[in-house]
Length: 157
Image (cartoon, rainbow, N blue to C red; front, side):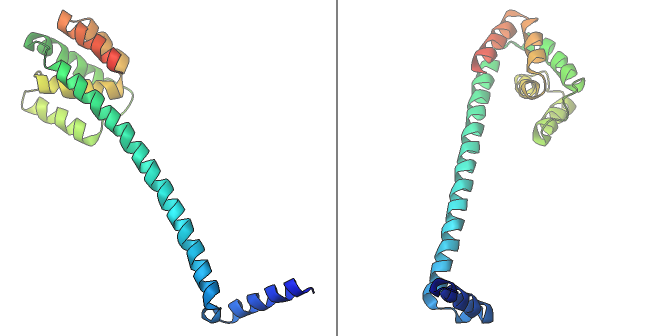
């Protein structure tokens, strides 16, 4: 065995006999390597979290823009469009809504406020998640203010 192999074997034996009896410099170096790897992993996780927050901020911005546009829809249009959007959501094959959004829609239906501006906001949000094309078709087949809303939603998306 060459000199390098002997040193490696001695180091291996030293570590194998008692992990705590290894030279302090070696323990320090190993700890630095471990801490550096953890730091790199935490930096990757942080960058992934920041990217997902940026994506969610964009969707929140889009929601706010759409909700601001919904305020200009007349009450008559809300009363006509909201039941159609609710039927679209109930007959959708895509699946369940997010729990808070579904609860909000259920609550508005229960207190008979689903045909209001707030109800239309929640229904549009749900419609965008479940069936965007169906939602836009319903809006386009209604009065002019709903058609304008549909075209604005297309631009936002």
